[in-house]
Amino acid sequence: MSSQHTEELHHDEHHGEGMTRGRILKVAGILSAITAVEFFIALYLVPHDIMPLHIANPIYIVLTLFKAFYIVAFFMHLKFERIGLMLAIIVPIIFIIGLILVLTNESHYWIDIRG
Amino acid sequence: MSAQVSSIDELKTTPWSGGKSPFNVEYGKMMMWFFLLSDAFTFSSLLIAYGALRFSAHTWPMADLIFQSVPGMIDHGAPLVFVGIMTFILILSSVTMVLAVEAGHRNAKKEVVWWMIATVIGGFMFLGCQALEWSHLHHEGFWWGSIPHELGEYFKSEKDISAVSTQQFANLFFTITGFHGFHVFSGVVINIIITINVLAGTYEKRGSYLMIEKVGLYWHFVDLVWVFVFTFFYLV
Image (cartoon, rainbow over all chains, first blue to last red; front, side):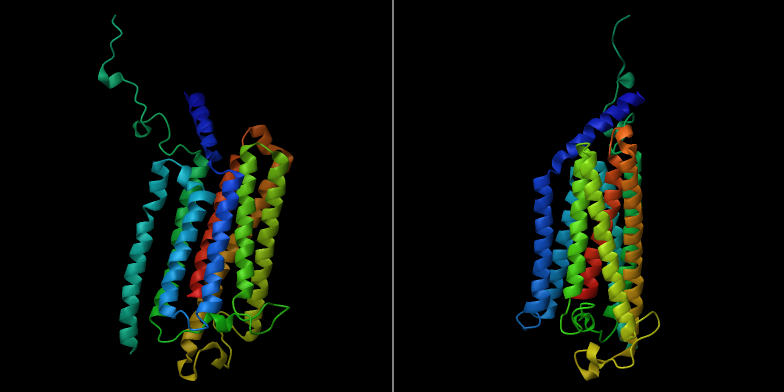
């Protein structure tokens, strides 16, 4: 039983070949390109008043989330894992979103009492 | 006796009915994922605390006014250039790491070694840059609990100047990049140990380079955290 078990594990690891060299370089290119766009916004669009900060900031955050997705899905290989593992890692992130909501709310209260 | 099997004795093969792992990853790899999840909570707590303090402040020192220099080359007027170099170094070392994992899948020992060495070099370069950045800020007067006397150059206009905000910025900056740098340092040490193991043939004997994948997960996570630190400290 146990030898069959490890054999199966071993076999399934090979579906890890979803990450070929070409794909790795493609993801690396995407990550570098997103970073380059961020720099373009930070060093050119914002200082030259082409894009105001309140528009640039949400764009930075969206681009960061894109980068996070590519790192976790492809470099960390989560996209090719079983759905069980994916959910076990991704669902708890809800707690982080909860903490963000709680503390942004709290900080608005702080700024009020500080006057 | 007939070969009839009652439904209760039927062999169940679905992932959640026992007999095999529903996650279908090796134990150590699964535990690495769960460790990284807990580490993600730690980092997000720090970053969210930073966000809350920043939101509750009327003014905040401008990142592109604080980070203006490339140590040893440009003293002023090059906003975000140095941190850009650091970011690309870390992304590149993540790429060499994933190439090491890929070589490990093909059991190509020599390639694994070279990509691991490249990753370690990338890690050291990042740590060196961070040391330069820290010492530069320290020379300007920033540290835990201390800020420069003259704050005018870090704010957009005179009326924005706030010593409290600057102090909060300094404390949070050194704490969060310090905690991240400590992770990078641990990652480099772990990568070196694993590289020595590869050279010693440990994983060749074991028949699988799965260990490279596990340290790879950790290393990518360090890169992932930097992506967020970079956005929230240097861009936003």
